[in-house]
Amino acid sequence: MPRNNYRKVFTKVEGNYMVHSEEGYYVGESEDLFRRLHEHTSRGRAIVAVLVNQGGKQSRLEVEREMISSLENGSGDVLNVQRCKGRRR
Image 1 (spheres, rainbow, N blue to C red):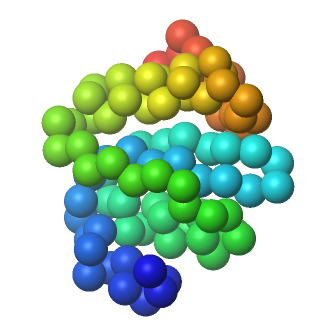
Image 2: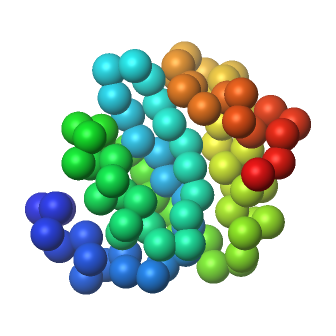
């Protein structure tokens, strides 16, 4: 999807996402997916997955932890492991 079309789809939509760069994978959550995905793609990161999650902050944090755990159990290098392992934002 061209970068300028993200706003039509993701404006003010809550959810979780996974991006990839040369360093590895980054998993996150946001109450504004368009804004956050735009920040990542502006830095050259590729969007790997997007999940719409309207369940609120706690739900997004739980999904984020599950996504990170799945990557840890696979072959992916996770860039934000320290933030989500037992530490709450």
